[in-house]
Length: 444
Image: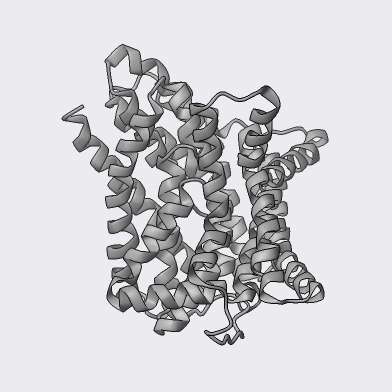
């Protein structure tokens, strides 16, 4: 019954948005309320559940997402993104540009949340598309694939990190084997699949992206934009701060106060704030931009993501309704005592929960509660079961997945085309991931 209610809720959501053209934020709130009723949540608690979902979704996201948008906008408006794009385009050319994008996305994506990495990289991706005359979606899909893979497979992202603890795995082994799984998965799901979809769905790839979010009408003098090294350093500074803070505190002993300061600067919000302050100088004052001009850039960055934040928050409300209504627990209980291989079982349970409730992190952790006892009982590799669960967590993202709406809004797609691209790509990454994990299981 819970699965039927979830399916009906998704259908109603699609009808409201696609048939009646109702605002996505309002549609998500309406469906959240209806699904809550169907799952038996008391009327007096529905609003508090919705508020909790919005608060938790945005509470984890709004600070780093907002600062990430400002950082990306400062780099873009100063011409830093243009400099990086032109340099990559010249160095790699059209044929190999997807590999360059994947490499850059892995570097940035390992330490940053999916949403922040997307916001930082999109201005650069757009500039590359313009420089080479390539569809924004064609150059953007490999980036999304790489960010999605790092989010699902690699620590220090939330789900893999928590799974390492749940399964008592070794973080270094998970990171090493995870890279061996993630890289080929992205090369297939982010490049080969992208080329196939480009030929099968040419009309979808004609979309040129959201005019307001991407701010396309910019022209730069190559002699006046920031240097390549400064532009790359500014973009990578959040990653460098987070990685450096972790390594320094692990290898060197400091006084408690110094260690707390390093941890503060190395936390995602601290790293983003520090990077924005640096960008104000490097991409603003150093480029002889007035404070009034810089303020316009910051204001525009926040204005551009305002509706996006509301949509993501409403997606969090729908997720919380499904969690509170027991959908995740219901799916998990279906597979207790299953004869499936622990690796396949972990993947299947995570896939079903992910499809039902949207959150990849919640899906992974819920599945871990069912599968964790099997690790010691069957002797399966903790490293591989972490990755199998992570692979399931990126499968089939759709209307209850905040990343789905980010992709849709930035690339200016309708829901149907977003399902054909984002959802198919995530599913392919997941399938390739579990197949490779099964191959690795022969040797581990």
